[in-house]
Image (cartoon, rainbow, N blue to C red):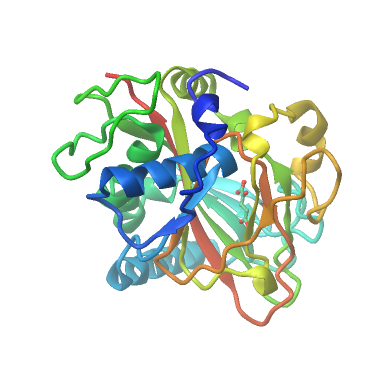
Length: 296
Ligand SMILES: O=C(O)CCC(=O)C(=O)O
């Protein structure tokens, strides 16, 4: 895989102190940060509880409702004033018609029209966690005690740049189809990919509803960020109905975190992930954000 991601040398550290989740978003001491970084380097993900407040989640709900209301008659995916509305088709493919008018699978770039989503792209907690996992400064050096990863210099002027933001709506009762296994790094635009390779990157999923195995919750395949990019094997399946399946990636460390609204999972851009169909009676909305190191 590309240069500049979580350092592989940390991944082989045989320290017993690995921490897969935390309730603190900043001000980690060296021991906790080291344990989280080692887990991130080995597994490619870390869960952070209560990353955003209930009020912030409420604002994201209201913003999503407003965008959905605007799309209430859409039967085809389309872009409107900078925001891309992807309809939920029976096949899961974005080019197919919606299962019913206004049923959406994904909204890309909600930040272009919504203050709540724009605030998430610059959210201090989100940026601080990404930066600390990547080993770059988020520009708030006094708040975190992050030591740089081995092999990566800390620069007080470095920052994380949000290059993708989305909200994924997974409708209940089988309408919301799954996402086949894939690696987000394969979908970065060339300039973002170059920045990611040079300065590192980190992606975040922020739960807006409970997210778990029963409602098509977000699933990661631990350790797969260290096993190379597999875009040629996954690209045809990505825009499709396929539920999570296939043997392209190592499934042995499959993990579906149980997230409450406001919790988040941070993951390496090359970590394989996906999710299943939502057969439950509840909807499952998540906000996704992709950051790359700005290196300035
Ligand atoms: O919504 C999900 O469960 C998966 C989202 C995802 O991986 C994507 O949007 O690429």
